[in-house]
Length: 569
Ligand code: FES
Ligand code: MG
Image 1 (cartoon, rainbow, N blue to C red):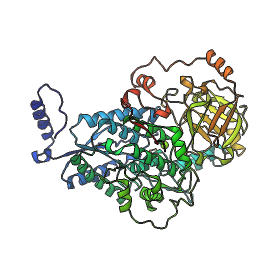
Image 2: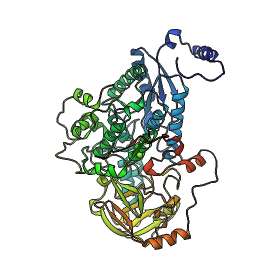
Image 3: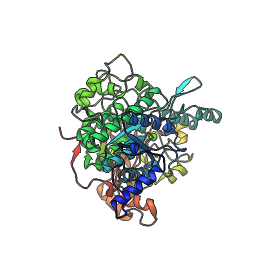
Image 4: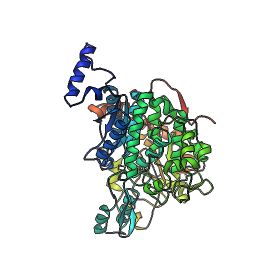
């Protein structure tokens, strides 16, 4: 058991004591002299997305022992999207700190990070990047799809569709509760291209997870074999000293950004990639990301942009097949956890076979990338839209703003029969940004006013400083920066103002003269964060950065800058 010793002022005594304690667990000297691979256990009774954790840990251990190492598991915080008050995003940085400090504290020579649900993989990669030891990501894998009255369903694009039908009066209370029991077919992460699936694909594309490891569903033999192989490889990485910074380079982040676009993946991933990269001194340049988006078609036909589910993507060849289609756009020299480059891995991958989930470049699902970056007086530091999941007829739109000051105001008024709102208005929600809520909730998917939903309105332009779930669809502008709570222009939008969205011009404009905006700002200045309060919430509000910087804490970011991605072409 190498590694840092607890400080008692006498190093030899510290080692003696450590050995005495661990021997209490029945280890032999032979076991304790082996290379130690830590396994980060994020199982929790409140996290069904990680419900296969015991089996995964057993398989990882088998792999480590087959390679001659000693596996030792240890827990960190677990985050499930639905059991993380106030939001999982609020707790992501806490999980990253837990992960970083435990990797540093324990005498592990390498770690296997087992995560899956949306914020867990980002938190683990942020922590491991800062901790600086060899680390490999293993995801828990996607859930199986279910069936509702003959229709195939999966969480949680279909959760939203059913809820929308219920709100619109198309299905009744009995049916919605029946659907509730059918949406999640097994343990595992959401079965569409939500944040969990997206981050799984990006971890593989960035080379920090084994080739082919992103897509096997949670309950399959492929998933368990992936776990065994991950354990085996972690052991070898420990001996080679293959640390995270050698894998998560600018080249690797560019590959991940490219795959994010080609998957039509979750908008949250851009925030998470910025946070992970920020731990290594690499900034994400949103304008160059937008240029990359113009040259990267969506190739994967997955919900919510397309029609399929993760298990279909797996059967179609998974991420290796997608990388094969994107080959000329990738940095093939990027090193992966296997010790080989991405290009070498692609040469080893199975030959392409006919399938219909991953399209060739000549027949994309969407001709350009899934995400576009907007700017304008309403979002001087940027905003994003998942254009591939938007209504094409709303991508160029001018409309009257109908403003909600915060989530509580929205909840009170959105379904009010007297709400003055028309289908071509723009719904604006303030104060759901990183500081505003705090924790940047996924409330950017503003529900359509009930009275319009009943009239059959399916989509409206919506604008906020919040996020939305990767499983959601609609013409929804997110991550407006700076956010309302810190004095961004969004703070000063009033009902009746005109908002102009032009995705072709990448513009988000508030058609109010600068002078008037200045007057409004002087009349209602922003108070910089909450200064009262205590504990983690106080730390969060004081330290959290804006969306384009990843919503990490300032003090957790790397001290010096190494570069930015995508790099200029
Ligand atoms: Fe865990 Fe969707 S709720 S992945
Ligand atoms: Mg989600």
